[in-house]
Image 1 (cartoon, rainbow, N blue to C red):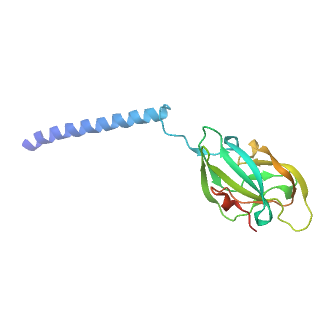
Image 2: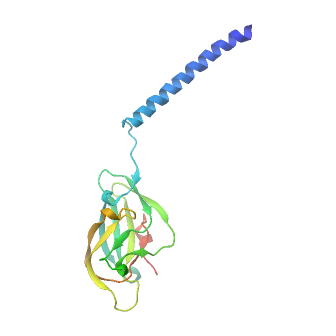
Image 3: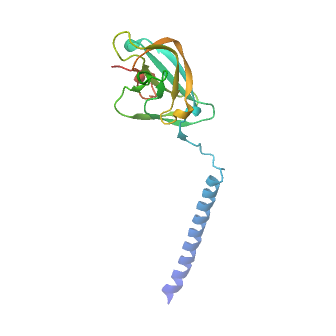
Length: 175
């Protein structure tokens, strides 16, 4: 008889502790679902989340370095694939990958940038066409592509691009 009486208070305490835990969990979930959570929202970067800049570099025979930064107030991850970019509508003017594998994602926020290097002419000879502009987008978000002015008129023929990298030195498109 004594064991039954001793077990009952223990069960009441355990029930009270479980109820308190469930109430705390429900309140925490309600705050997160209700939008009251202070945790930052992290997402995959879309083209509209970013600003782009292009500069000419002389290393590796010359290439275009594209810098992408998140717009103010946005924190996002840029996937480690090459940018969707092109110069005009001809297939030989569309950027293809220079790297064989996907690289690490780059977290963008504030001044943190991602870099991709585009070799504008991967062929020998003088073939190609000259361009002052390129269209660029995040891979998979081509519907939101933006035009980007090149630093100077550039001869384009079968361009190749590195993936997005956190370090500009990793974005040199070596052949």
